[in-house]
Image (cartoon, rainbow, N blue to C red):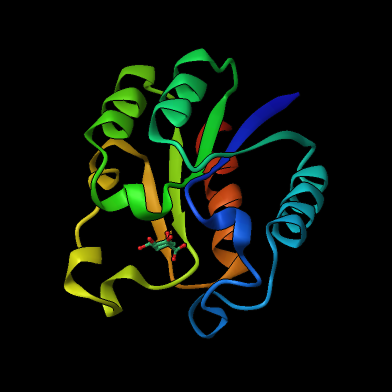
Length: 144
Ligand code: DQA
């Protein structure tokens, strides 16, 4: 069975309480449940990981044994050479997702250090960014 690692970066543990005008009312639990359901329909297995710590995310990427990575690097999108390097070294199919459209927000969010080392990016569709990202990732892995 195809196994996908879903990584949620910093502050995504408080989704549903955090800037709901931007990120919506969904919690990480409700997002994970929707991802799990979509994965099940595609006969894929998902492992969820959330951390507020950059080095822990690097350790998780380096140590994983999955077929692909779905990642919302959150604020580390815009700052993390370490996560960029880890994804690049791992070389797995990977999709970067964002709840909000990072290009319609502050200028410091317009640059992603992660985008050059992933298969592609989906930004701005709320919870659906994860579902669309999962589908794109699975199609990439299965060569469709
Ligand atoms: C985010 C966008 C980032 O700029 C921000 O730092 C986040 C969440 C999103 O999902 O829209 O924490 O990745």
